[in-house]
Image (cartoon, rainbow, N blue to C red; front, side, top):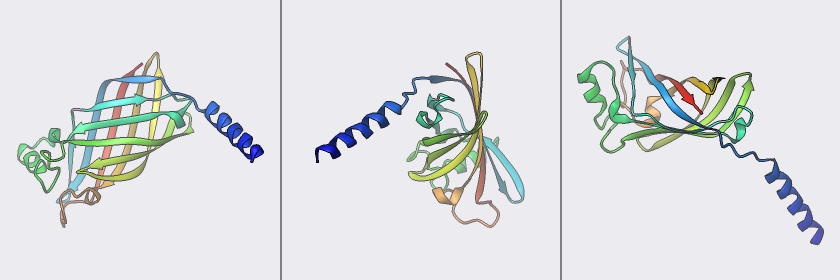
Length: 180
């Protein structure tokens, strides 16, 4: 029993001593959160604003890094006020009941120079799905850019119901310009 306890303490010490604390916090300078969906055979583009972030990212310690971001659902803007007002209602984003759309990393890995994969929990309308998202991180002179593109199925989040003319897939592009 005594030997087992010593082995467990040794393993615990070694494991915890290898964990790096990421204290490299990045502040948001500018950003773009864009979406694209096919509706009646045409592309509909739009943006979200009101982005808030917590970014603790060290390119040399990707596995210990953390990204949390949210946008205000009421800021949906497709350059058509009638459509935007409809998107804010309960059958789409229900912005009164669900004011935020969030994305939170649960793991990040370096794929190769400046290319990463993150596992993220995405929450829209109180429905959370896990998604692996490839992204790039390019740093120069204390500033950096994160860029990622991914696709979600709107039905997974209860957005828009069944439709013959509205695509299920929504492409999302995110670009963050940050500073240390």
